[in-house]
Length: 269
Ligand SMILES: Nc1ncnc2c1ncn2[C@@H]1O[C@H](COP(=O)(O)OP(=O)(O)OP(=O)(O)O)[C@@H](O)[C@H]1O
Ligand SMILES: [Mg+2]
Image (cartoon, rainbow, N blue to C red; front, side, top):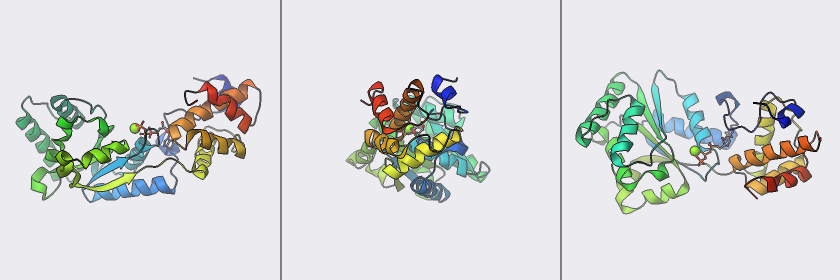
C-alpha cells in the first residue's frame, strides 16, 4: 500500500518496511562474516548460537544463511514458537520437521530421531533454527541436548542454531544448561551498526526502493545513528517517520532538522 511519502518521493515501495526481500538484504562485511561462520558451522554439522540485542538484525543474518544453503544438501527448518512447555515445544519441532507427533516423550524423541536419521541417509543435513531461544523455558531447554546429542555424539545428525538475546548466552553458562553449551561450537554476535554502517544501510534501502541515493543528507544520517544507536529496526522506524515529515513539509531532502522533528513522533522518543 502506498503512503504520501512514497508518492512524494516516487518510490517503488516503502523503503523501511520489514519485509525485505532476500536479494535486498544489506550485507556489510560484518554480516557477511557472520553468515560465513554460520555456513561453516552447519557444513561441519555443528551447532551455533546467534546473539544480539533486539532489532540488530539476527533474523536477517539467518535469512542470509538460508539463501546460502543448497536445498539439495541442507534442510533448514525454522521454529518460532519456542516459549512453550516441553510437550508443545516438541510438537512445534515435529510440525516443523513434518513428523507425526507422538504423545509420549520417549516415542516422540525416537520419531524425531528417525526423521533426522532418514534425512542423514539421504545426505541431507537438517538445520533447525530456534528463534527467540531466550524464551525457551528451562524445562524445554534442558532437553535440547537430547536433540544436539543424537547418535551418542559420534555423528551429529542435526545442526541447531539458537537465536536470541544476549542473556541466552549467560543462561547457557548456568549449571543446568552447561551440557548443552559444551555441545555448541560457535558463538556469533550481531552488534548494532556503526555510524558508517547506519549510513550505508539507509542508503542501500532507499536505493533499493528506487529512491535517490542522496535522499538523506549526511548530517541526517549522523543524527539517525545517534538517536537509534545503530539498532536497525529503530533506524527503520525513525527513517520512515523522517520521510513522512519531509513529505509533509514538501522537502525533497531529508536533513537533520527533519530527523529531529520526526523523532518525537516515534516510540523511540
Ligand atoms: N541485513 C539487513 N538487511 C536489511 N534490513 C535489515 C537487515 N538487518 C536488519 N534489517 C531490518 O531491521 C529489522 C530487524 O531485523 P531482525 O528482525 O533481523 O532483527 P532481530 O535481531 O532478529 O530482532 P529481534 O531480537 O527483535 O527478533 C528488519 O525487519 C529489517 O527491516
Ligand atoms: Mg528476531
